[in-house]
Image 1 (cartoon, protein in one colour):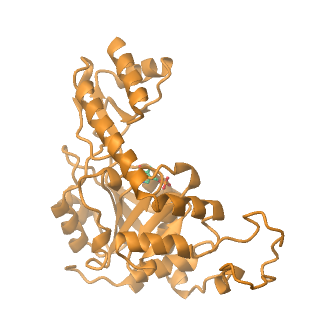
Image 2: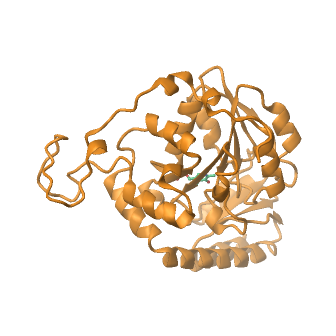
Image 3: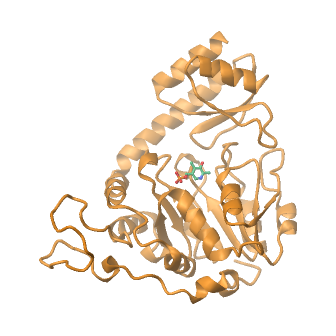
Length: 349
Ligand SMILES: *Cc1c(COP(=O)(O)O)cnc(C)c1O
């Protein structure tokens, strides 16, 4: 249970609180295949599969997600990738030049980019040496203008999940929203936090179809939170932010959980194989434990190794400029053939 008083009306930007959402034609009536004649949205009436505007509330997709995740459709907001979902959070809650947010480097770069884009001060509290949140420093850095603390778990680029105990301390000790980015949750041995949005009114969980679900190209990000938070985001969301093709593809995929699970299990098997071999490569100094679909390693000279791999046709991510990540490379787990080739090349270097 929350120890501090949480008041959503205090948190949201005052101009957003006063907003009336734009009501689009498709908000009033959605085509359900019945014999209604739609002459309300100035669309071209000739059927192409996508001649009609998409459902602005993505009802079909949300209904399936809600049933699968054990929440209601009022707990879900969908966006054009997590990037849009996170940007909507900033625009709803963070007053430019006044408010601030806290991130925990080394972590996903988008939080900082979005803070800068929205003219919001970004406060950084480094993870500990074991890549866990430094709870005391985090809570000590928050003030009455701190709107979000971003927790990425499993964390990109380190690959580990954050301790449940630490996350509870942050949720309980902070008055603003705790945004847990679960882009890699489907690869993780830890449980998702989305089951606990009822317990913590300040908890926001974001997920995506870009990683385990294999749909990075369609751009579908998901936000799970209290009805209060979601209804605020709905007032500022562009009406047709998730296009028809994306809704169709996403629906098809979330209904095919067996295929997703099969691919995830293959990736995890490959990851563990890859981690073992990596630890035998002489210039690899450390292989960090991963709870995701990538592996971070420390090497002798990351810039040199990065270039050597590139020259042999393998593109990885050099994370050396990130704090605590000196001389590190991040490998996404590929197919069995791709990983085999990676290992061959690493052994030759
Ligand atoms: C890849 C990734 C995402 C995904 O973003 P989309 O915009 O949904 O593709 C989000 N958060 C983290 C930490 C990621 O690594």
